[in-house]
Length: 246
Image (tube, rainbow, N blue to C red; front, side, top):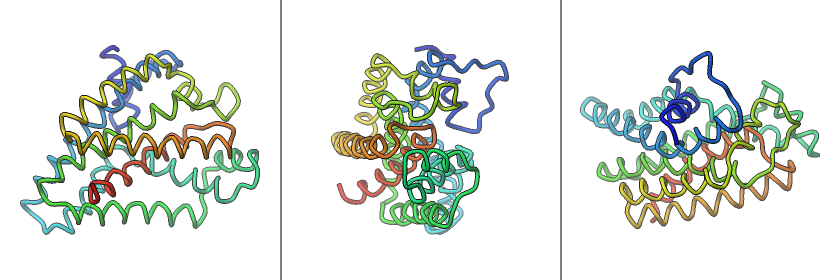
């Protein structure tokens, strides 16, 4: 774990600019992904600060819309794009080769756009069901656990594309020692901000990610960078749903 790895993680997960000289090897990416849950917590805290500011100015429905917009601005909408690509590939592709070819296409279909819209609406609806006191916990758990899920997925999945692809370091760079550190860091963050409720939600997220991983490996023979990004988006919504139930 290095400070340099933390800056790389921030650069990947947010709009914070990376240095042009950054080297992207499995080793540097793996050490950076250790920090994904911590970066998620920082994103969650930033969103909560935005929530407090907006709540003093606007009615709750407007605040929730602007909060989701803030999340998109902080992350650059990167994972929404990955979700659209993944849905498009899994929906339109009949074989592994078809799906992987569609994932490389920058254009997306109607179903992909509809799923992205529904995911945003789902987040909006869930935020509307939470009390003001629950919002801090919800935002931090949402951002932390969804980014933990990407590390879990990357560590225990083969890479579906040929060597040399852009997303390869993000899958092959995470070793078991990286995952153990990430798991410990996630446990401390989730316990600190969410207590036993947060740990229960974390266990459910880990199980859901395991199921999604099994499905993607069966359909694709592995995962891609888009699949990782979709993992983040799906788990953000899952955490918010669980916050309204648990």
